[in-house]
Length: 227
Image: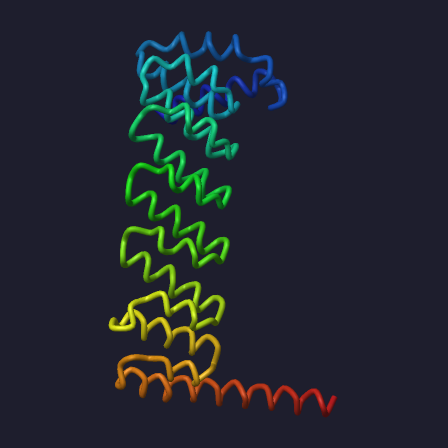
């Protein structure tokens, strides 16, 4: 079906020359879609042309809600238009719409509109990382993703204070500090760990990293001096 639709779209574009001329093709699109025998094919045709032209009026010609709101979601996603998401009443496509547009716009408020937990968590996670805002991590309802969010931002910012959002009685807290310490090459971070065994390991690993970086800097400075 998708291959047939692609051929249909290509034929229309070829017949009309160039893409800008699509603005005058509504009648041709309607005629071509209506000529298809099966209703499901007609619905798919309208949806795909609606997406191609970012034209909700074409989406509305689809008789099935699934095709119509699929069309709405793709238009909202490609144009970053949350107002289109608000028009979707389908419980499958609306959360996808808010998630994708929220990520596109780095808008955590749109993430809050996502009705499905897994998609809402993904939205907050992606926006938190993209904006480097650890304050968004607590909005994530899944513990594993929340820990990942905190840890990634602590490493990216080389800031162990971000790790302090994690429970000090868990290994998540110490692992976060270890990764931040390695990224910063700063053994003093290890002092803030809760588990003695992990703390000892942290000092060994990070002191070696720090020594390697000092040696590399000294070598580079010596090289620059002789130039």
